[in-house]
Length: 340
Image (tube, rainbow, N blue to C red; front, side):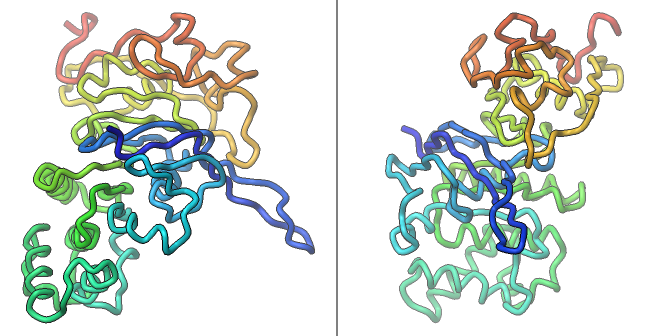
């Protein structure tokens, strides 16, 4: 059974102007997205900056109100619920923010930060020793010393702050977590530690996750399946167990081609995208990737291809439908025939 169901989700941010402050245009952030997340699954969302990844994640947990569409949790629609009706779901769905420096209140100690969420959702029924013991256990769970709970955020490193953010998300015992680029603001040496911690907690606690990132290498390591977004659309869904050889969309192939390789002797096609990402304020007709796609055809500029199963996986591309998709990439770590 799907834990999360999303149907035709749309999010527009109005642009106001003029003396009367009327809506003169919209930023089209998320454009008719549909997908499911199974219980226990980790789904990655990748794409360039501005493609709608974070907006999608925040719409799922109602931090941002969707403009249109449906989001359901365990079969119950949550998009139309009031704030009070949504409270039970707030506990079940949490988020780890991208920036560990701005996502924590600088005036609260770690203990006060965690206790605030715990009290709001009634996870621990009484204060005192029961609350202290629960917070101590949370600190140990994310790899921090219990004694550190009396410190303020500025006394921690970036990686430690992100661990506090993870502890805050876990403090209400959620089932579903949106991880919004949780390692992008950290040093490379710290990223692996935080990713390994999240992977360990996911397995131990049986969490379902949406993992938002711009790094396909990280997604391939961490996720079961990936949604590739471009200018608000999901243009491909693909399993990560053989990502190099199963990805079909030219945009996904370009992202994979930009990944660092593990073996310097590895050779793979280098796809250099020309042009810029179109404006989300005035998106072009047809496929938004048409202006940069090496396989573009006339109808690509006229009509957006539907996200349909082609060759065993959902992809939105007229070229794939016509059998013009590029050849599979050589997997990292193995030589291509040209370099053998």
